[in-house]
Length: 58
Image 1 (cartoon, rainbow, N blue to C red):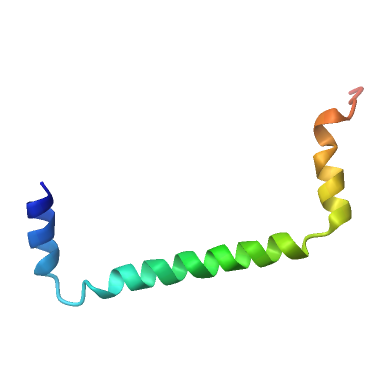
Image 2: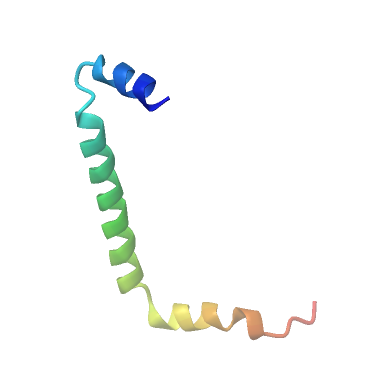
């Protein structure tokens, strides 16, 4: 099975750019999420962490 896939991928012109693009997209999304998580409001994080323990009378 791997030989079949490898042979087909070798015949595609410019296929070597796809791993670079996918790694770049992953890295950018990971860094953006990390920055968002580090700059998120501490008060909001504490509020969200208390949600499972709050009593809801509705």
